[in-house]
Length: 156
Image (tube, rainbow, N blue to C red):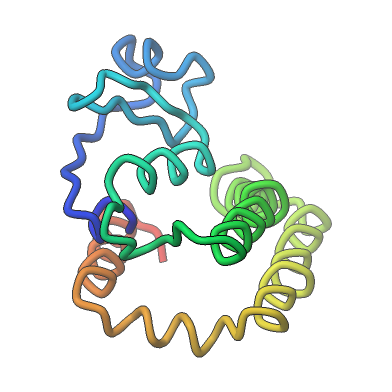
């Protein structure tokens, strides 16, 4: 969504291909190589900070002032260190793990909703914020694209 909001084009390569492994030796998503700077960055939080610093000069998505800037970094860190890993594990155990381990699925899905979304909702009024975002043309287009890609891959 950040790429779309900032009008940054994206090429996608398979993560196990040698070309991608040169970018990210972990062969995990996400990783980017910026052709404008020849800088390679991987891991969600690092990529978000890089894109904001390099391309959000008009502060469409970020702040250059304190304390807002540090609030943004704080919540980005919550997502990267707390929510992100739980979403990843929940996705793995619900979609890809060869056997359905209900205890693992329950653990990660419950963690996401009770501690992840609940924390954000309590402090950031998540639902109102999300609804306001959804009407922004770039964000709506990005969300529609994600839904179409998920359907194309047989995911809900």
